[in-house]
Image (cartoon, rainbow, N blue to C red; front, side):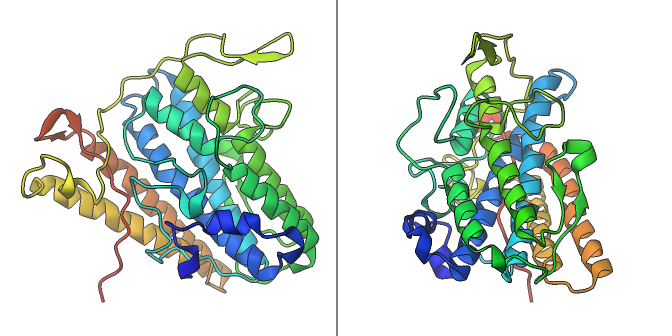
Length: 360
């Protein structure tokens, strides 16, 4: 799938194909790229959440970013299920397709945007808002000039509607109950009909960018929560959105950034290549980074294997292994975020999210 490489124009090229020429292979390619897009958002959001020292200190900000991260995990699962439902097979272990940081979003989406891994601050929140940007905002973020993830999903939804006969009980799909803990849109469930598939894409779009009339997330954990784009803009601007006589404005209560671990930006190629870094990373840091990357890599392999496992019991066990790896990653990340960098004691390390192939 070299034509679907992360650093390619695959999404841009897919969007430019006339709808009437888009069929089964177009949908498989588009959904594979959508899977990579969902995956690409999780590491930066996770670093932001994990950098918050005490979730209880400012529960609203921690809650907002954490729920977006879990929404993206749900979207990741739903997109993989939809790809399986049309006869495709999710790929998560092709290094050419996997996101690297700092770097662009997969396939040329939001061209010019560089996504990096760092602590939560207003600049990071602005980056996250740019990732989630809608083409039809109800308030302006002053960020124009590129097509959005939402526009890509809008195209996928149109093509899927025209090819609804492709959706069926064709592949192996994942099931994981996140709805009770994270809101009604967060159920990773099998998609076996066009109606179920169409609803899943609507959830993904509207959780990310709201509707054309409102910034409110229609599928929240708690009523009134903003969609991802607006939640991040509130943190970036430092004010809650308010509807004043029909116009949404950032004029509500202040949004306070909580105390965070001062994780610096992961440099190209990882911490070993950081400007001014010593010839070798401190041994404790190198061990933690290797362990984190091993967990991350095993998580991707487990998800990929789960979408290939016919037996339902074994598929669930494999999925549990992926979730367990994610739990281990959090503790390692927060340990790294407490270790100062020798070249810059005011900044600490953090996870790299680098995929490493299993040794033969």
